[in-house]
Image (cartoon, rainbow, N blue to C red):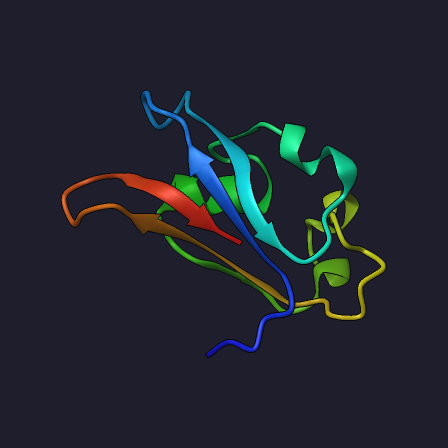
Amino acid sequence: MLNAKNSLLMLLSDGELESARMHVCGSFGPLPAGAYKESIGSGEGIAGRAVATGKAVLIEDILRSEFAPSAWRADDRRKSLLCSPVPMSPSEQPRWLMK
C-alpha cells in the first residue's frame, strides 16, 4: 500500500496524555541499537508531535527538516516518513503510534 521499507510501532503508556511516554514495541527494518530503550513524550520529536496534535506528520526529507539532528536513519537513502497516531476507539485519545 505505502511500499514502505521500514516501519515502527510505538505504544503510548497509560496515564494522562501530557505525562505519558512512548516506547518502541515492534519494527520492520533496521533500527539503532538504543531505539528500544528510547522514551518519547508528547511533543518530543516527530512521534511526540503526532501524539500532541492528534494529526499525522509527513516529512518529505528528514535531513531538510527541523528533525534532522535526531534522525535515527540519517544514512538511509530513503528520506521521507509518515508518522500517525491511531486511536483504539473513536472516543479515545490516540494510544498507538505508527512511524
